Length: 264
Figure 1 (cartoon, rainbow, N blue to C red):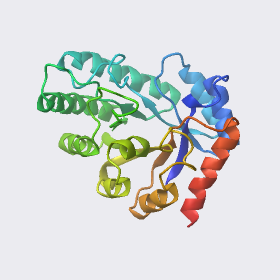
Figure 2: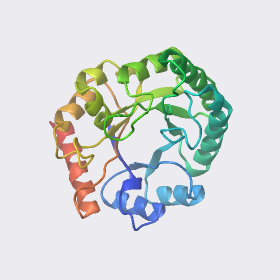
Figure 3: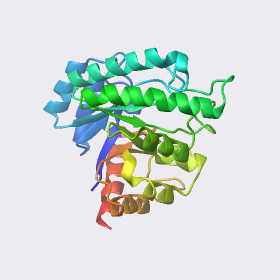
Figure 4: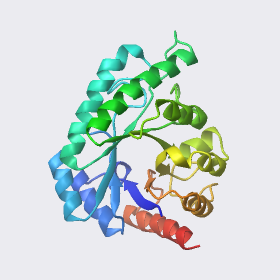
């Protein structure tokens, strides 16, 4: 069965991360995730999570365009990216986080797609070896280039899945972001079912607008049902920008939507 979790970064903007964790727990969630570690106190995060019985399930390794942490598609950024991976794993150990979401970086104008893909495979292979030494898992995320991340290299679920399979490490899994892949490809259920064996995490938001999953063009009740039927039993992360003014009510409604889908 899936485990609902929520990305705290887009919620309760007036609060500290530790206070956001308390609010998420009060809304009925047992798991949460963050973006990058900058500006955060690992020990305070861990204390808040333990105090409110929240599992911190993931964080972000590098910026989508590679501006922070390096771009794995750029061979010139390899050492920067590997050093960043080490740093994030160290932060995660202090915070109690065992998984890191990794991005490809943007297209390099003077390189072919094949060259960038090979650079990505090489960098992720090295990073997965580092992760293996620390019982850490990297989650590779394709993103959409039509709305949110113009210029991003890895905007195809098929290419992302091929890269994960080529690296062939249990310490590298696929992050399937339903919002991003609906924008890029559609046909999300078939794509998910074809790759359940390598998916380590999900992100979800409504399309269009990246708002609550209870609205928009996606039938999340059916998506959740099919994910569970395919045998997936990991985290299902809500990474969305609330349209509802009351973020607590937004979270409760979203969780109710997931749980209702699980009961059907």
